[in-house]
Image (tube, rainbow, N blue to C red):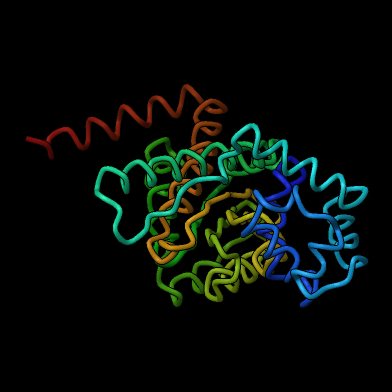
Length: 284
């Protein structure tokens, strides 16, 4: 799987911010008007974007396509099979029932598309490293910090010495003290959260195996990671709430947890039972 398994629409959306002006205008138009693009000639598209036909072709080549005609075909196929990216946004005036339907559809789409792009080889490598690590430290802030805390708790329950850090100073301290037998996992949907990226950079310099859980496409965090686990989420009007991205990142780290559980099943089951017994008296 991996990034190359992602839809053209998704790859364009994730590439757009890093493109030069003319290519970015074309990519943005295609993302926003995916249903109209298959009906437009290359000349029409170029004119609407204030770009040249050569720019359109260059963007298609960047996606690994032969040209604009193949892009039109791919988009038509994605629309015909109702790819999960075509999910309605929650808008002012929606009733609660409609908002719930759209949110659940968006989260389901995030999970399906994340599964589609998830690099299985990278996942296996991360599971192997985490299962044998002396220590696993996770970094994240905001909603990504919640994801890191959730993953650390689950790993701890199966006997992995895991801890999550959401404070930048503690992240830096943790990263500086890691070594070659340790794993550092940075969670950042944008891939540009300075504190998380810096913590992962320091952890890598300290000798730790570093993992980035982030959206598809190049970003600062992918440059300091030994392994990248990509997520997909579309939430333009509710981006601040980080709904889809949080669910997708949790699913990816739950997959790591499942892999670790399977790899060290007997001791993990014993650890789960012991922690369950330790907590049973804390419930009514």
